[in-house]
Length: 632
Image 1 (tube, one colour):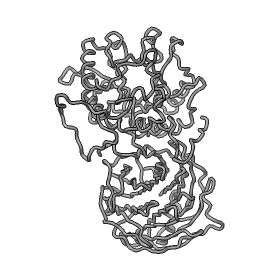
Image 2 (cartoon, one colour):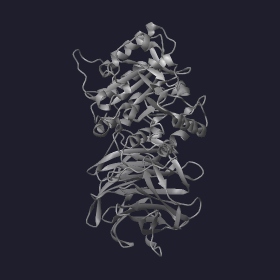
Image 3 (cartoon, one colour):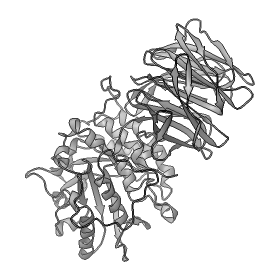
């Protein structure tokens, strides 16, 4: 499946387990309050949980039993009104609803709780707006037909006002917004997903055409007040995918292609009017329940979009998404060293701003390649073209579906580059044991491709890390290149700065233009890696190891595991828990130092850009101050 990260504003990643059970469903308010319902594993008790969004994770409250049944679904509005629907146990075909109020750490279903029969059928789904209008959609009890009901909450009951058959389909999901727009998704066959857009008119819904969009099963849908749509569904057994689009009249304009975000089944997705999304699903084994969150944001332009708040921030005070072995994304035999899914262009548009490029000579028509160990990755020229393509694009650029950059394309004589995106990109180059002549060739190739955007100077008396984001991107994109070892010391070229690790010898450290605490754990165990990295951060005083008079500019949190091969399988556990553990970590340690670089494999699955944005001060919701973190 193609991945076009640049046009997907939602990036659910690998989920984190929060409970055991089956058929979960989720809803969210604009203040980040989450309501979840599910059925107990292989039995009929129904449970609900309340949670609170806190940066890139959810703080869940106790799981509370509230009834019995199957296939529960839930909706909540911004006045904390909750409507839950479910089918009765086993082979029954009776549908019930319950109205409650979200209060504190639970939903108050009333005393006694009133569960009301309202129809017959299976697989119900429900949506609710801020005026109390309710839309319910379900599958007929014996045929693959879909029916809807329209009503309004009054007290602790729903007064149904209209509804009829919609058309054929099965396993429906429904969402609505406060503008009276309704989106219904369903399986149109055993292998295809389809949707309809509806508009509430009086006591009825006027539905548009049934439109097939992709292969898959068990779809869920969320809809915001500005018409943004998210669907999640199962594809090819247990691949969970998400897709976003925008309602345009009676159709949805879909963005790019669907993206896989996890493994599992029976996904449910919700979105708030303040641009946060939550997804829950069953795992593919052991009936475990998992959740993930996402900001709605254009990650391709996250720096430029926040210059009003981050522009005067020094580089040493920023948190950047960073990718480990950034160029190792190819499949085939190269997959033995694979650490990323996205190309450099995909990583840039997903928000990554710090790249780890390991380069070796190739001795052929393409003189340099990316590598890791003995595994060869893409040509360096391909990586440079990706970076070039990204920085040339104006803000808000979207490639058409199926777009491919022409090979060998040359700009006409006199061509001037557009300003492009106002983003800072850091490239660290590792080029071991090569000759001075090869280094000169490397500098020439990079300069020819990226020279217009290289950072070639700095204010007198300032370190690179003391320059502000505004100073870097005042007029155009800024690419800061830092080179390992001695090459940039012996052969100085504008735009090629000297990189030094924290543990460099005293003389070498003094040469460093950019000094980074970069000590990986070399562990396969997640717990050992996590403890090692946070222990290093706790002790980090912002000084170079062998000369305490020299400042160390940035701290890199190496959130990576180091198996001999099969990085994907090791990376999953670390990526699932990045948001959780960053939340538990103080923004600054006892020396006043901070984590600057979140260094991960398979960047999109870690939601690393969202985590970095919250560390940079992103507010949780549009109407709520930033929450206080719990100490780790």
